[in-house]
Image 1: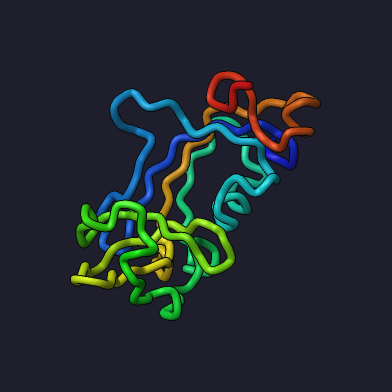
Image 2 (image 1 turned 90 degrees about the horizontal axis):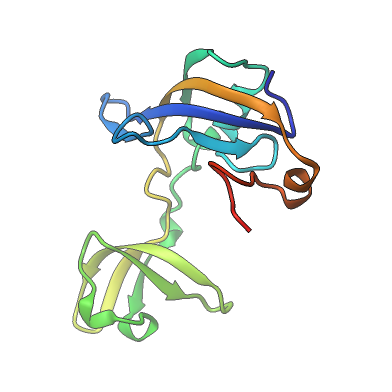
Length: 162
């Protein structure tokens, strides 16, 4: 049964409210997603929906924006001088870019519009504000090793390799 400190593998398909597939592990012979449960490796609503499930369970879950990537924050849509981008001459609307924040951190943003000296960007996660629909199938559940628990992630096949 899935609980904290179990290694969980599952296939998923994520769709939006119109039924369009956003992402899936069920294509191109992709392996199931594997993670250490209870360590924040998933958005909160999906992690909560896995709790108590067993191998072979297949279920659907619909998550509100707050259970997923949060509400859109319009203050994260900004106009930024080009000098804050590494490769400003190659920026195009619809692409992702990295900017340096005033606190010295890097932030990934979506380029909305490129002007002659400024770039309009959106720092929200692309799925912020969206209702998310998941179809999930549990394929494996096992006890995590002491090392995996100590490191907070899965090792080996489907996980991190040191």
